[in-house]
Length: 265
Image (cartoon, rainbow, N blue to C red):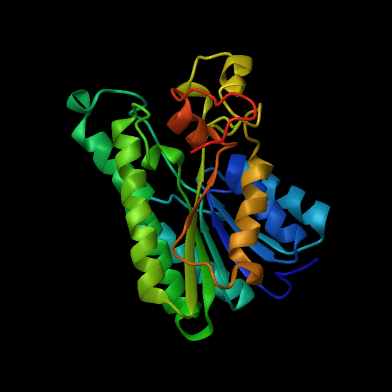
């Protein structure tokens, strides 16, 4: 199936992890893919791997999501190269504060987090809207997290992602019907980004998930491709949890299980 045939996607922060997995999945399903990252060599290698695997056109654009001029240059490069921009995926998120208590947070650090995690997403969407989507339509996807909706003891990161959740809903309302805007909220996905966040052994962490394992980048990528595709044409403003049931387990962990054969009221 090639639902993205003749479509161009821009995946922001795509040299590794979830962003790379999404870029690869979109290319497998027919899209030409532009990919950004801060470091040139790993990005070019990532784009080359996807091009070799899928046979689709890829474009590596070195850009820092927090820099306004880099965001503008990235969208301009996509338009100059492909002549269109149908799909935007904002897969960037930084968390240098890790799990510091809110009262100990450095304000400059928090400011950088909001600039990257929220303002970058807004500006990329504005640029894509003006460059192509306002006249031709399109689909936007934000990479959020379950930490936007529950206490994970990462106050700065969670605050930025809660803001991104609200922004997703407002953009969906204001850009409809030509552009759909959705988000994904993963739990623990096995990537290098997550390594500094937890010291719990993998087996222990996996046991807390109803699905019995941690998430893989490909789990998120397949959900991303669905929300971006015409198959989700009546879905906008939603945040889809990709969390192996973690949110349900957290909500119900203190409730006793009913005895076999007893009705659940």
